[in-house]
Length: 365
Image: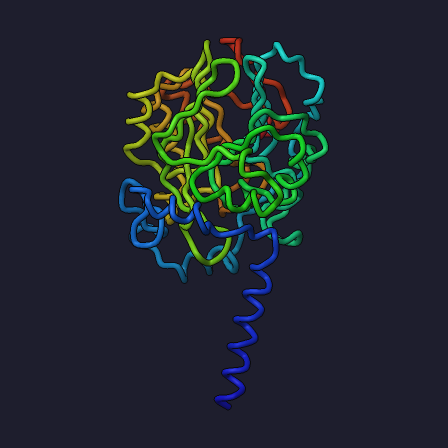
């Protein structure tokens, strides 16, 4: 019996390393990159840390209960939409270079063009948000953009290495159309394994700033989250960004639970003409790493937002709430705080130079 148990354990361990050794799982930092990671003040006890103590599960909840609810409890009848999510297939390749636009591509993926410079943020253009095609499939209608729709990009921007933000098939497919990649410390190891060149990568930690084309500037700013593409967590950093152009300031939020960093960013870099912020896939048990709707509203106020664009919803069911609840709550709570919240459908163009953008309440249909 002991030999059987040992054999099973050996097989399971071998299977784990075979599976996680596939390209989709990326690469851990090593060599010069690992040395730089270890020198970061944010890296302690062999992993990156948040500014505040951040448990993955909130007080009063247990991992067993959370997993049971996710896999076995009765699901909300509107966990997934009953018909295709409204969307519009804008031809990204034909947008004139003199137009300043934002286009949501679903979940936390979006395209920004400003001052003639193009940015693609966290593109997940597969039909699934996981390492496996059969798991975490996109809602019908939410997956109309494909890697082949992406034009030549000046800057590919990645906020962290989770599968629903750093999508191997998409990022590898567009490799030859990308100028530079901007990403947090450690994440460059994944892209270099996937064929990106070392001189393509702009990789740093919170507080670093870089001058870009056309007098644009990007700054790495804190977020409250975690990272990892297998069981090992926090070997790479997660981040938000401040993008400054000659005429506007834009906050690129990534994933983050609420904390004091929003107020710090607002006071140092705000007010912001636009903030693009996570709003969706939340749970009381995860509130420290994914903001609840009321936390998102407070973050918008802390950031001194003139316009708010909520993302991280309407494509994948990563939490247990109704698929359209995030948009219902953010618009309702935001109205009470006089926030101007923009809710385009996937693929709809937002003119970044207009001050009166208005969009339909499309998620109630």
